[in-house]
Structure formats: structure tokens, C-alpha cells
Image 1 (cartoon, rainbow, N blue to C red):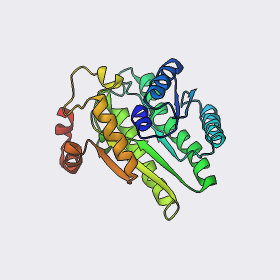
Image 2: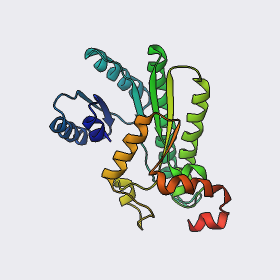
Image 3: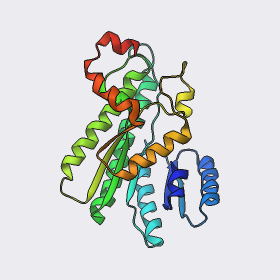
Length: 235
């Protein structure tokens, strides 16, 4: 997504745990658009104070080039874990802390900036798994993504009639490091390049919700409420 945003001429603030990957990404972005400002910092989103300080530093970085931090994409997540009660407690808790608590911390830090400047676009990357519960390794993951869906909706209510936009993005299967770890290739998988382009397109529309790709996931969402528990197990 960062590469795609750079093609659109956006200046970028990028944070992740692996600084060496960010350095490589920064060089790739400069090759695409040498005029793009790219600020990078290492960050583990479960370290609450680090999240606030990193976002504040990014705000200062943008102020230094005469701009404001006008969009934050909350995208950090993992899919560790397994069936509850089968010895995966530590992995399940790590997923819960990263995907939900880490996301909430980023929301708090971003919204402090947006409320102060009275505008901004907060984007939460949820998942199509947010709409039902799933078994085994998906149990906690799906619950965290449902939590993001609820957080986004509640925040939209809170900032109604204010110049702050809150978007929930519900991706299907996109080829990433996370999907590489799956035992079998899931249905309707799209490439990382195509998925990134579709995500950026959806984010730039600044709509409250988006399903990526639209086909088949918008229609799958319509069917999900009618699926039995037995069907969910097979799904």
C-alpha cells in the first residue's frame, strides 16, 4: 500500500517492528517518486507509550514540511493461535493484544491529533472474518476483527457531524506473509499487488465501509448471517 500511495503523490509516515524492511521500502518509494517525503520509525503497537510518542513524532515530521498528518491506517495484525483450551493461550493472547489492544492504542493516538487539528481520516483494516465466529486458529483472530468493526462504528457515532472520517475496510484473502503460513490456499485469493491497489482505491474513497475485493466478498457478507454453525465449521 505504501508503494501505491507513493505513486499517487502522497507523503508517508511508516512504522513497523522491522526497521530494516522499512529502510528497504523507503528506498523503493524514492525510486518511484523522489519528491515523496518518507518518515520511518520502528514500532511495536503493543507498547502503548511508544505508539503515542511515535505518532506525535510523525506529526512533527509533517509539520516540518508544512503539512499535517491527515490519514492514519491501522493495519498491524497477526494470526497466531489455535483452539481455545488446547494449549494456545499465550499465542491467542498475543493476537488479541496486537490486533485489538494495539489497534485501540493507535486509534487513541491518531484521534488526539485529528481532534486537535479538527480533521483527519482514520482507517481500520478489519477482515471479512469480522462478521461471524470461526474455529481453531481463526477464533481469536475473527473476534479481534469484529472488535475493530465495532470500535469503528462507535467512533463514527462519536464524531458525527465533525470533519473526521472513520473507515472500516474488510479485505478478503490477499497474498501476504500471513496467508503464506496457511496450510491450504484459501478461496478467492488475490495477489499482493492487486490487493494493495484495491485497498488504496477503497481507502481513497473515504467511505464508512468497503469490501476488498468487492466481488465476491460484498455478496458473501450478505450470505454470512444465514450460515449455520456446521457451515461455518466447513467454511
